[in-house]
Image (tube, rainbow, N blue to C red; front, side, top):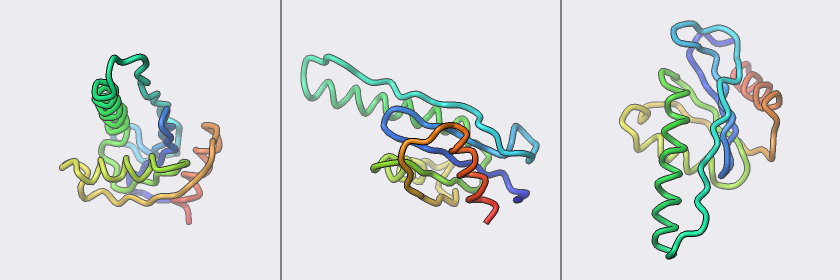
Length: 125
């Protein structure tokens, strides 16, 4: 087990399941802290408006995730597609997270329990 504050998450375009080993100051057991759902925009009048809404919603989604991983020194991101790469790039462009050690994995749909186990085993190896 690690004595550092670490976090892991499974993400796709619609939600992120976030797991950390710290609640405020304590580094203890890993636990699922939250499932963040992305806002999906429907029925915009133009492609441009739809794109702007999508970017705005994605930023809101990432900000919610950021709140949950604050103070982490390492982050493990897994999931299908390109969502984990996009989140990694977003975080590295954010001054607060530019020195965060981020590792990526790939995984299809997972339950909260599976994400918890995946993150635990990643940091225990």
